Structures are given as C-alpha cells and as structure tokens.
Amino acid sequence: MSKFTPTPSLLSRENQDKLLHACIWGAAAITIFFLLWVVWHILSNGLSYVSWEFITGSYTRIGEASGIWAMIVSTVYMVLLSLAIAAPIGIMTAIYLTEYAAPGSKFVQVIRFCTESLAGIPSIVYGLFGMTFFVTTLGLGFSILSGSLTLAMLILPVIIRTTEEALMSVPMSYREGGYALGSSKIYTIWRLILPSALPGIVTSVILSTGRVIGESAPVFLTAGMVTQIPESVLDSGRTLTVHLYKLTQELFTQHEWDQAYATATVLIVLVLVLNLATKIIANKLNKAL
Amino acid sequence: MNTATKAPTQGLQLAPKKAIDITEKFFHILFFCSAMVGVLSVSTIGWFVFNEGLPAFKEAGVTEFLFGKEWLPPALYGIFPMIIASLISTAGAVIIGVPIAIFTAVFLAELAPKWLADIVRPAVELLAGIPSVVYGFFGLVIIVPAIESIFNIPAGNTILAGIIVLAIMILPTVITISETSLRALPSVYKEGALALGASHIYSIFKVLIPAAKSGIFTGVALGIARAVGETMAIIMVMGNAPAMPGSILEPARTLTANIAMEMSYATGIHSSALYATGIVLLGFIVLLNGSLLYLNRKRAY
Image (cartoon, rainbow over the protein chains, first blue to last red):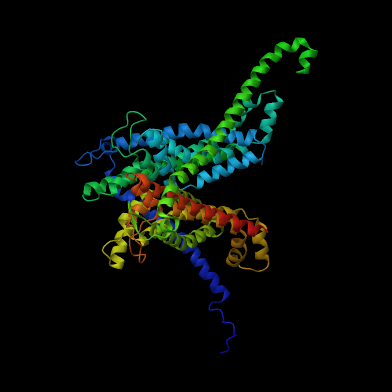
C-alpha cells in the first residue's frame, strides 16, 4: 500500500447520515434523561416528607424540629428587598436607554458595556465584594439588607436587558400617537409605553426572582445563615438554598436526609411555578400583539 | 416662548406647561441617574476587587501567587492547584457537555417533530432554572457514590464528579442559545443545500452549523463562564482539598470554592489573597469574552 492512497472512508455517506442521526437522537435522549432523573430523584424522595408542619415549622439543628418556615421568610424578604432595590433602577435605566439617550451614542455604549460586565462577573465575586463593602465597610453586618443589596447588583443586568427588549418592541406609532395628542414625554411613557411593555417587565421580574432564589454563594457570605425568622432587614437570615447546602454537610440520620430531599423538593416546585408564570405571561404577550 | 409675547392671552396656558417642563427635566435626570447606577456598580466592584487583591500579589509575588503549589495561609499563598482544578473541571464539562448540547439543539431546531420539541424546550428551560445547590445535592447523593463504586475508590468527591455535575449544568445555556441561532438562519441556506442534493443531515452539518457558528460560540462561551463561576455545586461534590490533583479521580478545589470556603473567616493578607483569587477569576472571564469577540470578528471579515 502506498503512503499516498487516500484511506477509504469507513462509512458510506448513507451510513454516516444514519450514525449522525443516531447521535442527535441519542444526545437529546441524554439531555431529557438527566433532566427527568434529577427532577424525579428529588421529588420521589422528597415529596412524601413535605408537609404543612415541615413548611411552617421551626428549626433546630439538633432535635426533631426541622421546619423551614424561617428559611422561607428569609427567602421572601430577600426576593422582595432585592427586587425593590433593583427593579426601579433597572426599569428606569432601560427607559433612559430606549426613550432618552441617542441610540448608539458613546454614553449608551458605556452603559451597555457596564451592564454586560456586571452580567459576566462570577457570583462568588459579588459575594466577596458584598462581604467587604456592605457587611464590613458600611457596617450593615450579616443581614438581609447586605444580601439584598449584593443580589440587587447581580440581577440588575437581567432587569435592564429584558425591560429594554420589552420597551423596544413597543411600536413607534404609540409614541408618535401620544405626542400627536399633545401628551408630554413622561405622560406618554407612563400611560402608553410602560403599560404595553408590562408583560416583558413582569417577565424580567420573574426571571430575577428565580436568580435570587437560586443564588447561594453570595448569599451566605453577605446574609449569613442564622435559622431564626428575621425580625428586621438588619437581621441575618438563611435562605432555602443556603439551608439545603448546610443540610448536605451533615447527612447522617434518615431524618436529615429527608429534610434535605424535602428542601430540594420545595426549591424545584418553586422553580416550576416561576417557569409556569413566565409561560403564562409570554402567552398573554403573544395574544396581545 | 415667542407665542407668549405675540399673544398675551395664551400666557395663562403657558404657565402649567412650564410646570410640566420641570417634571420632564426631573424625570430625565432621574432616569439618567438610574442609568449611572450600573456604571457605578461595575466601577465600585472593580476598584474594590483590585484594591483589596493587590496587597496579596505584592506580599507573595505575582509568579509565586499564580504558580505556587502550596496554599497554607497565612504562610504560603500559591493558587496554581486551584487554577489547574478550575481549568480541568471546566474543560471536562465542555468536552462532555458541549457536543451533547449542540446535538440536542440540532434536534430541537431541525429533527424533532413540533409536539416533541414543544415538550423538550420547556424542560430544558426548567433545567436552567434549578438552583445550583440542587445540582450539587444530586451530585452528592447520586454521582459521588456511583464514582466510588465504579472506580472502587474510598471517596467519590473527585474532579470527575465536578465535571459531570458541571456538564449537566451547562447543557441548558448552550442548548438554548445554539437552538436560537440555528433557527435564526434564513431558510434559503437549507433549501439551497437540499436543492443541490445534499441530505438533510449533510446540510445540517456542512451548511447550517457552520453558518450558525458565531451563535454557537456565544452559547459555548456562556456555558464556560457558568462552569468557571459555579461555586456551591462544586464545593459539594469535589472534595475541596487545596492540593495539586494527580488525576481526575482525586479531590480538588477550584478558584471559586477557595473564595467561598475561606472568606467567612479570612482576615488581613489572607482575605487579600482571596480577592487576588477573584482577580484571577475575572481574568478568566475577560479572556473568554475577549476570545469570543476575536472569533466573531474574524468570522465577520
């Protein structure tokens, strides 16, 4: 055999097609398999342990009290406060970018660049920053407020980008119509543009709710992990994800396993509900257009 | 303004208009200030991370810090084992996850019947929303014991476990973005290929995927960013020993895990070293985004 003979293809073109076809179906099957496996494994082990007592009960590390009410309250505080800080700023930034700034101007580019950079920073670096800046330098301590401020910075890019897209999809004629009727700019934005962009804005809020619930590393570095129900925003609190993390570090008794599975179940159900809410709003949006 | 002097009767109507002008101005400034918050946030974070991290570089020396093999605070600060662990776990996740993700994206965009795609797509979105601690927990109870029994080792908390968990975690990111960019292609690409007698599969791999390359690269880059930045899931499954790993069947600690595990009690130069670890992490992300820009620009020419 000469060196230069091209090696004949092992597979005919037809068989190559079949092989690739099989690969594609196989890959899709693997993706679905893992999804079902993760969700099924958690739910099948956790659902039976989720009860009213588990959800509303109190928690002690040693002993029988294994409820997650304090964690649910902390998580809700964290979500509400982060959104209360980030949503107005994010929405107003998006309004500025779409309605006020000259498109493509240097300033808009700078803001875009900064938003993209914010989105690219790993969440642990937010935790690092939040711990030094909010917890220590500003003296807010390990508190819901420190955690919320940190997470607000983290979700800001999500809110800005999603709201911007929603605002840009509002037809130009709405603005023209508003001005033609003699409305001022702010009145047009408030009465015409924001209402028609509302589904998109709500979507951005739901997406960031998911982010706040799902984050853990920056949360335990800034909000701490006290298992008491926080009485004010300056109290430390433990969110559900941080709680699951702490539970997994001490999986010795069946009781602790059950708690971990049940907490993971609650988290997955939360994600399902949020996903469903986004779907419903997206459907409404499609119908409206 | 001119009309006011010409027709004094209209002066009354102009007065409220002036009030509106002030409201307009107020909101304009308010929106502008909001827009500055993002800029301010990035600069504060950047300034803090560098300001806090630089003393460690000075104290330990840049090469000692980056290539030192021992992490023994407060004596030795070498993060080379962590850099290696981050690189290996990310590379492994990409090698396993990206092909599966791209094939799944092709499946959703081209092969799947509409009803099936309509079930799989929301499922993939669900996969994206699951908190990383849940993935970590899954890895801890399923993947870690599986590795123990398959490879017959005492502890399954290894780089391999991290790789598998990360591979699952990057799937949704890569799938969603690749599918979007495949769907965004003009239909003439496919029609042209089919008209020339290419099979469907052939046109997918020789025409559609190359055409959607920049979108797929973006998806892969975001997947890599997610893998590099992931913290909790990694802490839960990878064992966290700050020593140089000998193989993927040994425990290791990534850059992110190093920060998360020691930050709560670190002080002084130790804390500064963790900030410096953050700088290295940011360096990875900048490098990643830079190469993505380069690749996409190169393609545009």
